[in-house]
Length: 636
Image 1 (cartoon, rainbow, N blue to C red):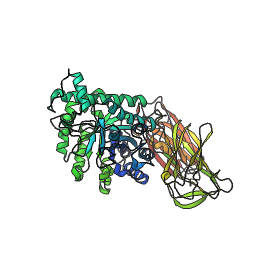
Image 2 (cartoon, rainbow, N blue to C red):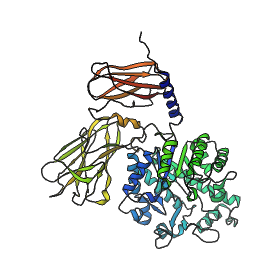
Image 3 (cartoon, rainbow, N blue to C red):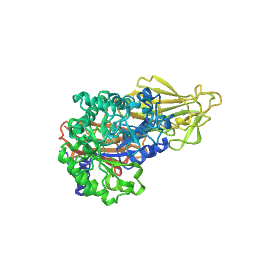
Image 4 (cartoon, rainbow, N blue to C red):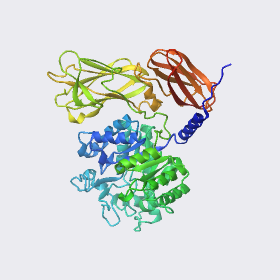
């Protein structure tokens, strides 16, 4: 009969507490809005994503529709205006850059359509009309107030909410993103009127008369029936937007950032005809990040109490809080009270306004008090956005090169390699691919005038078939991560990218830097990869003892475990329950130096949390050489 070894009670208590904390807060939205101010360069975008990921945020709302212009390359916008993107970013695709950098760090990225029905702004590229490019082309699209004026108090011009062409234009912009980008969500904003005084343009007047026996819209802007009629048009818009996006990609979340500044009145509806309660009740949104930029916890609590008194779908309601409402930073004690209130109300998370208000002390406070560890986004499978797999050109275990030399030019991490046009020079990048899936492939480029304009990158698919992509390494616009393409790869070790000096041009040079893979969720939505799975694919000969996270996790009933030993060692690998009782011994023998895999079939075990413990011993088997513990979750 096998004896059961018990862990010390202090260890058991500590582990159980950690598991309790993990289970209680294993999933929550930790979001932040990123305005166009933080998107001026690729380097800045990378820094933003690193900051958020380093502080354990998991969702970023990136400005994608701003001041009447897209910050992505939109064919819908070009079909209307002749412009592909905001002219300020003519050589770029800001949204694509944000997606690459966000997914590199395992962040979900939502395209934030901040300006919604706003079509132009007098202070930004107002066009020949002075109102915005879309109004240069469609002057009849401008919304109008009861007094006949158009511009609101913030110098914005709004598009007519009731026009089907306007609605289809905005939905088309969203569809552009869902079809052409590996985006995680689309967040709409300003799906409202700029006030009850709007809706008096010629088109809206004609539609109202046609549905009300020729009667004109009421002169009283707060007439109950007139308010309801206009609000219902926005309700129909949200339903159409939701259905359209889901038809393109059901895994793209459609969210909205409505406002709520009332403790006893429906402020969003009464002031802006924004009936967002109806969107939540009818399933026209997956989630709302409700703007409640309160300055104290008492006010926030009153807002939330009123909302939750009227809505039972709290799982869809994320609190939108401001770090510095009205420009004044809140004390940490107030932020802590607000966070506690949101948790006590059972909300699935918080979205913070905004990235630009984070300072070093705020980052430190959030990381230590609010977000000490990484967690998943609610409703997503484990590892939906596992961090990118990156192989640097200096990694001798994953890179094989011939004829390359180091160059003193900064790359992704450290310097880069270069090769001239003489002879045959190649460099191959291999990846330990974690799962059968479609992957996006990126190469990091340090642009330099003496580099070739036709650097050859060969991508190898699962059949070993190569596809060549030429990259202009001399162009500044390609500085940073460049998209090479999409490939389908099975799990295991594969050569994925080769860079060579073939046909680069006389006296030209070609460079080699890091290469990255990220799972393409448009094409592989059901693949499950835990964030820890990236740790499971290390060098063929590790330099220390380590235990990888089991995969998949959660699992039923079988899972794989990888571990590594730097030299020949006796390894004991056991599974215990949370009381420290051994329920399975997966390994107890000598292993050669390298990476090894074992499987556990838990068909006879009950659902629950288990502890996987590795203990390694020296060759003589007497002295402990290394140990590690991981948590496993069996779900029936």
